[in-house]
Amino acid sequence: MENFVVSARKYRPMTFDTVVGQGSITNTLKNAIRNNTLAQAFLFCGPRGVGKTTCARIMAKTINCLNPTENMEACNECESCRAFNNNASFNIYELDAASNNSVEDIRSLVDQVRIPPQIGQYKVYIIDEVHMLSAAAFNAFLKTLEEPPAYAKFILATTEKHKIIPTILSRCQIFDFKRITVDDIAKHLAFVAQSEGVNAEPEALNIIAQKADGALRDALSIFDQMVSFSGKNITYKDVIDNLNVLDYDYYFQIVDHILQGHTSDILLILNDIISKGFEPQHFVSGMGNHLRSLLVCKDAVTVQLLEVSEQLRQKYLAQAQACPLPFLIKALEINNQCDIDYRSANNKRLHLEIALLKMCALCSQTLTMPTAQAQPVQVAQNKPAQQPVSQGVGQTHVSAPTPTMTTGHAPLPPTHNPNPIPATTPQPSNNSTIQQSTAPVSTSSTSAAPPQPVVRPRGTTSSISINKAMQQAEQKAEEKEETWDSPFTQEQLTASWADFVNRYKNISQSFAAAIGKYTPKLIGSSEIHFSVDNKLFESNTEGMGALRNHLKNNLHNNQFKLVPELMERPAEIEAYTDKDKFEKMVEERPYLRTLQTELKLEGDL
Image (cartoon, rainbow, N blue to C red):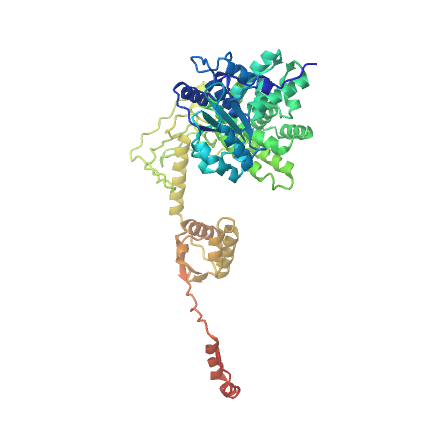
């Protein structure tokens, strides 16, 4: 039976060009070899499985090659390359600092540095997991690392650069290895699958690449696991079942149901996910990534940030077109808050369901919101005093509205043309279509269907908003002309005042508490005096306006005057000492002084 070699060892890169995802570092190392500008020490740092030790071995092999190629790669034919390939090279030493981290191990290494190479030009020392060395071992290694012999090169590799002392870092050229992208890992897995005669779906390889989290060695280990599970045919279904990965289709289905407002289907899908053994927080994380991918697909410039297969990218693009941008942003906020509060929630499933229902409600509000509010069109009419209006024929004159600034105040009343153009009465016609088109819009009918929203370019003003503003201005003008002067008593004022305080607590509790602290007083027939503790409260124009409107409507009187009065603060109470208290008591009871003298009481008294 032939010994099995894992793919991570079998397909380990042997040249700089075959290193996956680290092009900038390999090009720098090749240029240094070509220009003969090699430093005495290198530090390769980065996450696991990204090629640190592999690049160190390739570099050691290349600088000792007797016949390097023009591209500065090892020839694999000379004596030094053959010895390296057979693991019999005396010029390359590998030391695992995790198990050889004492001072004695470093001293033994320093003693070996004194021996020149037998074959080749350099002796290369590769120290893996160098951050595991003790502080004493680092200090023993400093001098040799700074001034080694010309033939000695040190390559240190670590996953935790922050644990290395600064004196070591300052003596090395530092190369930061990055995580390998999903696309690069998927392409390398496709190459391995083709070399092994394995038929693998692109989506399956992409899932393996994502599961590896930037480590090529982990991706190859997962690939071997999938080959053992499914044989020579790796499918997307086999990968998600074996690796316990939640299928993308669940997220697509949930977003579709959210857009359509199908809350029951959303809860059923969530129940199916939980029944299959997936942790709800894992679903929350995946939902966040799905919404983020949809947001990325809203702009063609950012689609390149999506690390998925081409077939899946098309599905994201299609669903992103159906999702409004405000919905995606708000849904991401809801999902992120759900993820933050998930650990502290007592009923975690209910917490997740509420978040999904919030997204569903948010989307339904976004989709049903009209572009213009559907309200009956009301047109201000200028009717001549002596001219009757025949039924079915409207005489309407709409004057141009006065421009108003957007300051929150009501627009000024419209100015009527002093010489209005007389309306022409249309002749009766037997054509019903013409009669319907000339009929005016009823201002009092409630059964008329609301008009359809009108799509208009930005910066224009609809006739609905103009007519509505004109009507409000006319109503306010009529209210100003009308006078309410019904008499009221102190009891009616007190009851109406208390009713306003109870109602206004939900709007401004501080204002309601300020005016509800004291009872108002009716002075004469129109002045209402009330006490306040702070004059700043008068600047609350919104609260004062609401108070005035409430009293006007309840008392049927708009001729009263509100007169606030500032209450005087009580004089500050002085702090008395024990001696002051005793003197006060002596004034009322003189015999206490005699008692103090006879008992010889001293101290604070």
